[in-house]
Length: 290
Image (tube, rainbow, N blue to C red; front, top):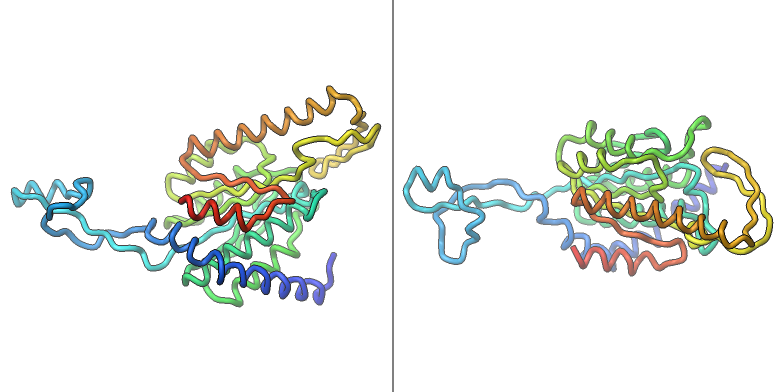
């Protein structure tokens, strides 16, 4: 457990790094990727050559016997929701950082980018259940509160595993207005495809899957005792056994395939970031590709 002074010091360090990134790198990409995706009806006007025929209002057109189109305007304010995995598996990392550290920095960058665009930001923290809900608000003090929780919040003592399904169901029930929702997790979870499809009908969902090199491949290190971070189960593994390493890698690939398939079928976006990767380049590439 960190002391209050240690938490505040780390909050300040993350603020300096991620606010700079959001101001100088991501603000433009964020605006281009998401501003204008939320459109509200403004009025109808007569059709003019060159207008998109998909925007024709057929009811008004039939009433006046010549074409009219619907005019939409960009919603000036968006709501950004972060669904943040704080389960024990996020505390794994063998390279530059833990998955939890990566999630914290990416969440902070997104939060400051949204704040720069005058958008509200809220968070749902989850493990095998929803641990905490911070309603969407604006302002620097609110963003700093989010960062403090990202650093300090721990799952309940009786939590077992990760349940993405629970977080998505909570989102669907709690937020009726459309949001831009980032789900930050390793997605090592019970099935969640049905809840994801339901949430994606109302919200613009972006999954950010974090993983470590040794989630993907087991190093040959002889006979070792390992502990499942989420269930507490202990077991011995002969990591020199090629079949053991193959099964370990195959389980990772199966989980990866399920995640990719679930997001594709729901129409949601998915980004994958490894703990030793430059997440700045990954996020920039994603934002530019939206």
